[in-house]
Amino acid sequence: MIKKLTIDRARWVNGNHGHESQLLNSHGEMCCLGFLGKACGVSDDSMLSTLYPSGIPQYPKKLTSVVVSQLAALNDKPRFDSVDEESDYTDTIRESRIIKGFKQYLDIEVTFVGNYPPGGKNI
Image (tube, rainbow, N blue to C red; front, side, top):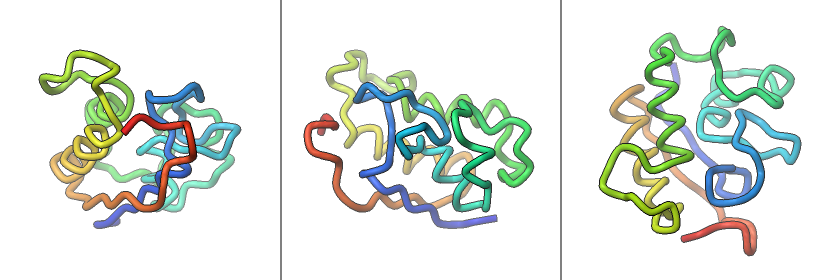
């Protein structure tokens, strides 16, 4: 199992812009679980237009349905801390929560790299 995961901000889709959050969408963007799949050797065809990794055998065994729902919530909506307003739920907060969540649930160290596309993100 991988111990480190890199998420490229330019390809990371989350709740802060109009494209649908999927493992891999038609724009070539991935949610945090899509980056995990890519790092674990899951093919683009298996991830394309897929919301959750259930049934894809290359994902880590620790990635149970409960962990998937916890991690997906960290990517898309404010559920697990005191942030109540979606407008206050910035990518900086999302990044922090994903880093903590992946470490807590999967013992994977996450690093974010690159820049967000112009006009597409809320920092």
